[in-house]
Length: 403
Ligand SMILES: Cc1cc2nc3c(=O)[nH]c(=O)nc-3n(C[C@H](O)[C@H](O)[C@H](O)COP(=O)(O)OP(=O)(O)OC[C@H]3O[C@@H](n4cnc5c(N)ncnc54)[C@H](O)[C@@H]3O)c2cc1C
Image (cartoon, rainbow, N blue to C red; front, side, top):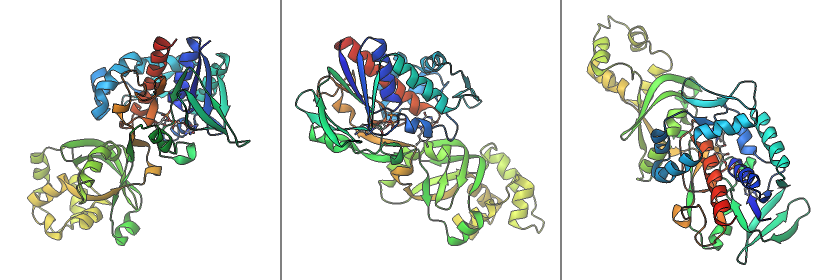
């Protein structure tokens, strides 16, 4: 029987393990932490979003410059396949109003992970917990350390899957410490960068004290030609929320130019320019700006404070000025939040280092899956789907090429 070593017990590694065990392989998973799937469980904290119901072409486009690869990967293991996989573990899913796919409410992420681990054990997959991969030895060897006993040993499987994750939320085990071991083998890694994270705006002390954490609903954010709608949260460091996360690639690119990235907030995206101006042309009749905004546009706290914070006083002088400002409140972003706080990681193993089977060109029979590859995607189920699809793909490649 052929033997495969899977390094990393996140969703990408565990799916590859399951598929290969089902194909008759002898599978050993080596996971540095005391339990598998820690980041998978964390993903459940803010609503466990397994995948998305978006149609295929739009779905693949979510993977930015990696979309041609993902079009193929998603055709092999799609959102529907992911839902069938969950159903096979007795976890029913549903499509939420936003198109996101969630497990039915009675199923917690831990239930799904428990059922999955039980299935893997039934299939004969051996989970070696607290086993850290240290690097390659010779042509096929893997050096591993048992973290409990500190003993170091080598295994030489017929195939290896590296599924070591990104470098955010280090406490879950995704610490990015694998980079030097790959570089030592000549594998190029694109430097890590935070993806799907908050953006820092240098608020004044007054603003921080007065506004604190406050949601802004039904807004639009623009950076360059990219526009995202939804809800954001003003925080003491800046802004966060789904539209901010979705704009992180654009913000990151703008920040490389050196000056603050121009993030613009549209407070009334449902009104046309003409409708907005018409409302603002109503006589103020001695009302203060906060009262006027509240009564004509239902814009109340913290909007007046935000306008005072971000725009010069003459930006609200005439109805035309005010309309322009409400369409594009400037939020100068001077940095993204630190990598460890980010929901996901950009960067990782460069695409040029793997072939169409996701096999390392420099190390035949070693495959790479999940977030450790250099791709990024927005929140909304696209991250887990990307990990599952790459996991399924490497399993198929191994079964076909070596099995
Ligand atoms: C707060 C938060 C919420 C999220 N919510 C969602 C969501 O709702 N929907 C969604 O699609 N995605 C979500 N994600 C993202 C998703 O959880 C990740 O993209 C996914 O877990 C990555 O899977 P992976 O298998 O590539 O890596 P990981 O899940 O990071 O697993 C990698 C594993 O490798 C192990 N490892 C690392 N180095 C070694 C080594 N040297 N030796 C042995 N083992 C090692 C790690 O301990 C880890 O267990 C969220 C992430 C976070 C942080």
